Length: 111
Length: 112
Image (tube, rainbow over all chains, first blue to last red; front, side):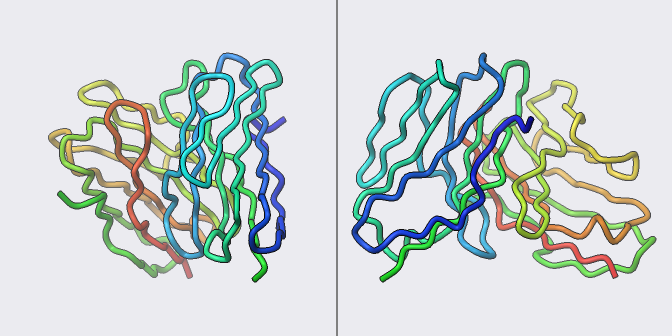
């Protein structure tokens, strides 16, 4: 079992819709969770981080964390073609100093 | 001031040659990371430096890989006797303590 799992996609949504990106992790003691966006040929950039159970909103983005289910998600409201990218989930696992990344979900927003 | 700086941006080398990749982190960031990303794949952790502590080398794939960080700032990742499977984008990131990470633009390494 991979430590951080994501569906590779592509996830295709129409412009204006809500995109839902999901991530599961194996280390129950994980404390910190991050979403990075990576455009093709570019380096990852941080979108959001979440530490506590529940929802955290920032503009069109909402991160959701459920530690009991070992599940973290990213919702993108009013999706735009410029949101088309690969979204990487990263987890700070117990005893690990570095973040562990999932393999990413490719999102395509259709105009 | 500036973000994480990596050089070179692209490197083509022949199989068996040694390469050095450089990372200049954000000023004041105590933590520095090297990750590797193969085409279409996620990020593979290589090595982590934090202040004056011993580095976490647990992600280095073989003894051909080594890294150092001088003066708590600039880091160099060295790959000896390069192989074709070493071809990837090598990403450096820095942070205050452990998170969040700020990535450089990466070095695209091609081994022919």
